[in-house]
View 1 (cartoon, rainbow, N blue to C red):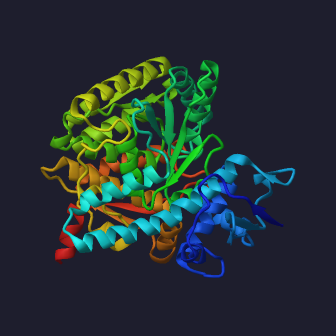
View 2 (cartoon, rainbow, N blue to C red; view 1 turned 120 degrees about the vertical axis):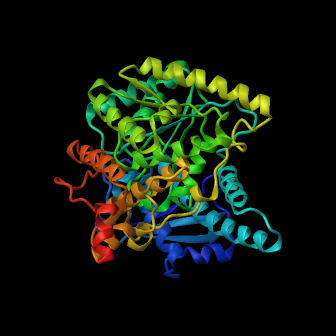
Length: 465
């Protein structure tokens, strides 16, 4: 089957060089990423978290960029039939296919531009990265100047149970009734449910300007196709820029139950909040789920207190089995954010004043060598401690669902994560709960860990001998 997809709006202008770099005949790394992301979009709504399954199922799928007088057309060769109705591609999938085209090309162009600027004058790397994130969001039309802070970021796992899904949906309904827009990681589970609920709530209120934004990155979207409620898809170049985009673009954060990926997000926002420069920055963080998930949040809270100290709990609020209270707290938080941004003359649509240091921005590649350098020992800098723990959980996510991480495990065995005994014990306890509650992988009936936790103090005498 071959299908030609027509351009959508202004997402169809490429230079000849850009078009050539994305051609299936170029056989380059850029085309490989482009093909995987496009295949994920064409599988919107699919329940999977394994990129190998999609790639094996659609081995003959190819996508080609065709230049003509009206812009760029897309030639789809053997695409998934589920993306079409009576031979016509679903409109939302059509739009998001051109979003992939925009973001892959845009990412390459911005990296070149950033390199050129850096060579001309000395600008702090941290500032350059933040400006590149702003540029990506602006070109994607995600940033709307002048609009009151109104975006609730919803984090949580893709492998949640039906009770947790229904609860996240109810929270979404109440957000929608307050005309609050929703941004998620764009996948299934806890990323889909609040969008679905808010979609219904917006409809009840006749809210015609509703927004459902999905922020992802190439290795994640390849494993977790977008859910069908995502209207605005943005593909960031790596997980660190994706996380920074969440906290600079979003105005409040809700964390639903999840697995290692949710723990990674939780540790990231804590590492930001723990910086003294951010002590006056309002960014509400609410952990919530049904009463059946009470033990999950108790365990997450215990983990955070154990590794970062009891005082860390002041940076988040835990609300159990009360969707209405969650929505009211978010609404109050949005009002607080608006007042603060007005007082500090900061942008309503992008938080410039939030301090995010370079160690939170540097891409972390999950390899055995990089993981062995993680400092998971007690130190005075709690923000850096949270950041290193975030990287450890990021490695577990990579080993579970990302192609590069799975290949690393296949070649060299499980990742070895070492640290102080109490930190490793707390991490082991949390991960065992994730495994027992089947929060890690949808594609495995019995989870085989991609990691080994090791008490570094116990290992040192052996090394000395």
